[in-house]
Image (tube, rainbow, N blue to C red):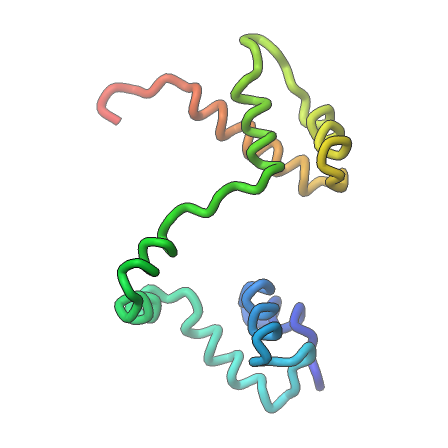
Length: 137
């Protein structure tokens, strides 16, 4: 029975972005046939395992390896959230819902629980940055 890329992602714990890239490059189609399933079983067994990653990275030119290890820039919405919390005046309260609405107005993002969770996560990150570090750490 043919399966969608979403089903393959869920069943074999492979990132949907990876499967989409494979489709874009013509390696797979939009639908996976039963005869292709063993290939995904094998791929899921080696996906993300350090010993296989190390072998691949050892073959890369140093320039490409450095570019790969460089931190990925944060999306504009994430940078905005961080800036709002970092630049808040002492004692100023920025509610998650208010900031979510502000993001909707400014960037057109959809109000959702996922957005609220992202805001909370980034707010926590800023709080941790501002927290005084203990000696010896």
